[in-house]
Length: 249
Image (cartoon, rainbow, N blue to C red; front, side, top):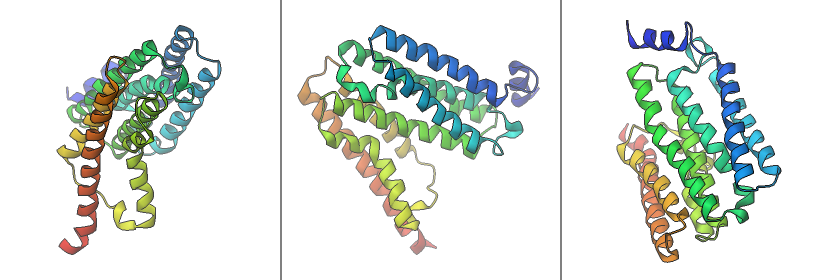
């Protein structure tokens, strides 16, 4: 039996329908955000923000997933990515209430984010093993990574760990996309790059270090600055490659 058939059998015949996956994801988000809200005495608005974020995520999946996924099902790899999302939503929902982020909250954010980052290596491997790589899956994974970095950047800044310049770590990718609206050449497809993947991992690890309550302030500044320098170099290399692509044709 080939891997895709094994996957379908393991998931029960035709696999788990997309709506069922989203409902299960909502249950996971409700449990995690509820525990976070109760454990850290956050305002009730935290729950509302979490539900709103998951609603936006579900809308993204339904809009871009249907018609681009075999059988209209997420499949094992995207299910793992959705599981990552249920860990990221409680983190991102804390941003408007970052003033209440004490040492215990920082450790909780680090735990959830670390789990999400570890799972980042699982979904891609599943997609390769079951030969189920799709354009939607790649975009889902990428957008989730970018959103986590943006949320962590805000938490580092609003938590008083670094100045507003640290937002560039999470926001540079969105600035790059916006620049592509002005300069269409920047919207070109980039080749696969190990450098790009490693720099993304470095950004996540660096932001978690910056959130660590035991990390002194000067070390936070150094770690964040080095991470941002690596990110600027990576985006600079990609920008240069895209601008020079037409000359190579």
